[in-house]
Length: 178
Image (cartoon, rainbow, N blue to C red; front, side):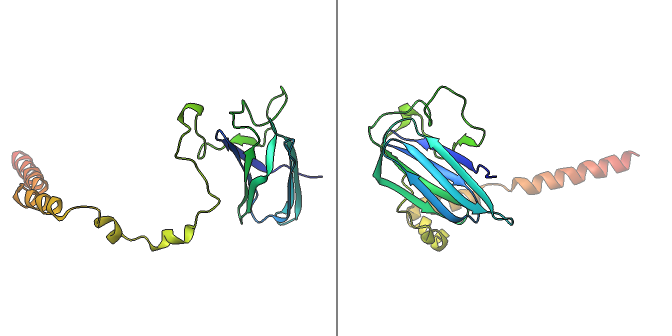
């Protein structure tokens, strides 16, 4: 008997993002038909369990422009819509969405917020994030701002030490009165 993997989705005006959450998936097969039929099958887990799903997407899609990325923890699919329009939901029909289908709030954008800040993970190179250091950030600031800040810090009174002295005076007075 096959199982259903967790599926997350989000959309833009021109595309739909589908993420199948299935760590260590093997024998992954994804098929997308122009009329919007999305099928998925794979095996995963210690018992090599079979996972399958078939989704009838809300509208037609551009199969040739759509992309897929099979990762270690998930399968990420960028489905390009045949017509640029917002879908009311991911699947056709009037029924309730299946229990394994959830909105991907990390990628979600409201219809009125969709603009030039489009999410496209297809060409990202994550290897550059490891080389980021604090020095790269400092180049954006002028030195004069840093100097003014350090002058203000040197001239300002040390508040933390006054509190420590005041609390020790209160303890001394309390000990003396007992």
